[in-house]
Image (cartoon, rainbow, N blue to C red; front, side, top):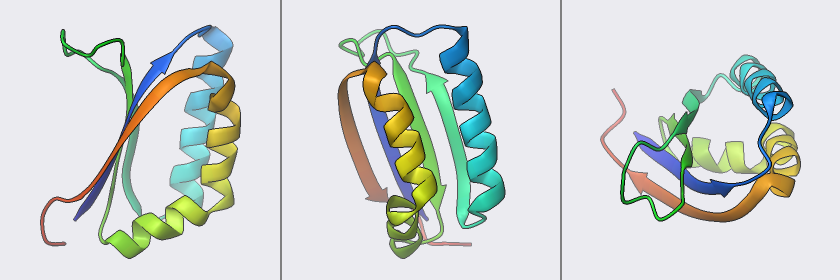
Length: 99
């Protein structure tokens, strides 16, 4: 298994941001079946240093993660979110063998 985590500092969020994010994630899940899981969540850690949001995703392999990174769907999500991002930290890691 391969895990991709993006911690985000976001500003200017409104109801439109959340509805568009939800629609993009739904589309991603339909278009990219090799993305095993994908969630946009609130970071509940008290020591988040302002990184109050996260994208959590998983893949069977690092190669599947690379396919996702190169996909037009990933680019659409990046393009949409970039105007809200004040900072981000990425963690990519092999977490367990694929089942």
